[in-house]
Image (cartoon, rainbow, N blue to C red; front, side):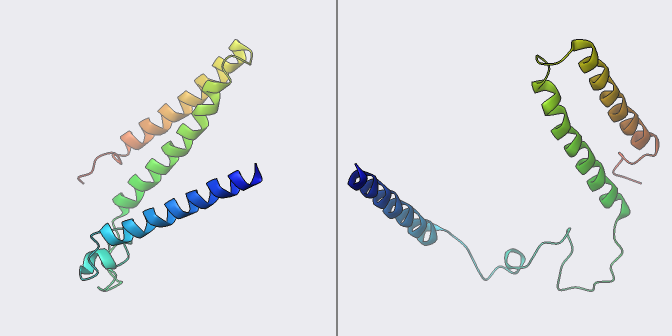
Amino acid sequence: MIMMMMLISIIFIILANIMMFLSVILSKKSFIDREKSSPFECGFDPKSSARIPFSLHFFLITVIFLIFDVEIALIFPMISTFLYVNLIIWSKISYFFMIILILGLYHEWNQNMLKWTN
């Protein structure tokens, strides 16, 4: 039994090495391309001047995305606990959470942060 497990693990190791070797051979990477070999930092060219003004609107859109992304991660456990908790308490908590989301979205809309053009 142990020999069979060792044989299977050796086969998997050999297959993994073959697949890694084939991916290196078959990849079409070009190290000549300047854009692909340079690091990407928020759309800035790292080889140019560091004193370029930063778009505040770009930053605010990113923050809005991160906030709503975290809130979506908080909504998923609420859905999975629906069957295990009191329905009245669950609905009050979820309604309160959704009201906070909607008020935040309304505030961003009211401040014209959702428009890409100025």
